[in-house]
Length: 150
View 1 (cartoon, helix red, strand yellow):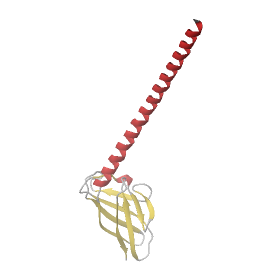
View 2: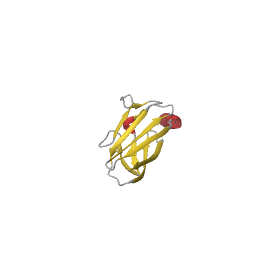
View 3: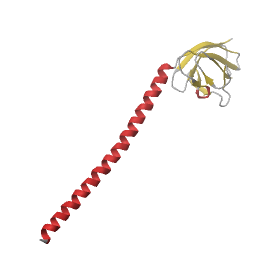
């Protein structure tokens, strides 16, 4: 009689252990699936914002010591002025409003809304010639154009 009881108890303990292991695994997978779902939602949101972000190069100039150019937000998203990266001939000059790169939107609120123009200026010693300038937004959308230094 003790022998049957011992077999039953060990089977019950193994069953309870298996149930606990399965519930821990399900809990862990649920958390992981939620994290994957949130990451996919964030990626979709960023892709949507990138698709809706369109920039237009207006004009630019330079005087041998400084360069400046103007871009317009012709898309449907608001852009953070302080998150634009600025390049000249593929060389990064800096980030807007950090260091020597000054970026001023028309409203002065550091948000480039659709239809608004952004002025970007920075010191850049350059000889006469044409230079390619580029601005890249926080969503990776970019615009480039030519700046001619007389």
